[in-house]
Image (cartoon, rainbow, N blue to C red; front, side):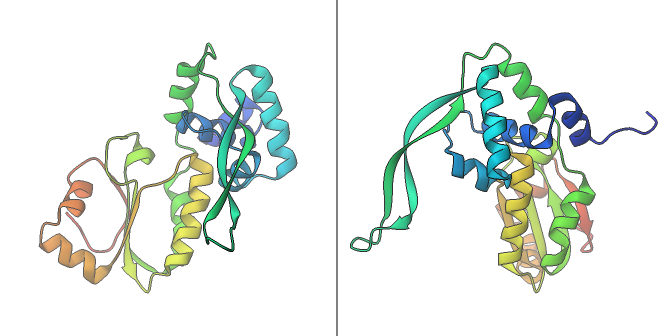
Length: 213
């Protein structure tokens, strides 16, 4: 249709804010996992005061409920060098929410990122020769990998940072693989199972300078 809105803009208009959509997707993709306030802030990259406001609204609506659970804290015990654990109060999906499945199906089957969005976030990590998306990006949830990055002079810390940014939009941890061009071409020639599992099953190529089949 003319002037078609992007998926995320549509969701924002329906649900009130991008922040709310990101928080809902995170909880719905991880229904069995409780999250504390700091976890939500880190995963969604949303400011604390906004997270608090949206969580209150989602709790009042009945989608989320409070949950006490044990969580590791960043500070490590100097004697044992192990992460400390403490009990915190967070939130989890309320499985009794009457519209849970329709809401989950609706949000999970809408991809908030276009190819250009993914490329923009990944393009600065090195000389990319092949960029493949699968899994969550194309609603093929049984595949082994969501993202394949192949290239030269790849800076892994930049790739991980870009992936964390994408995860904050998607609402779920990504399964990803990074190869140098040389390593990938070797694996491709050897019919490596992981590579074939990516290429022989549903996927989409955003960049393909290697003319991979």
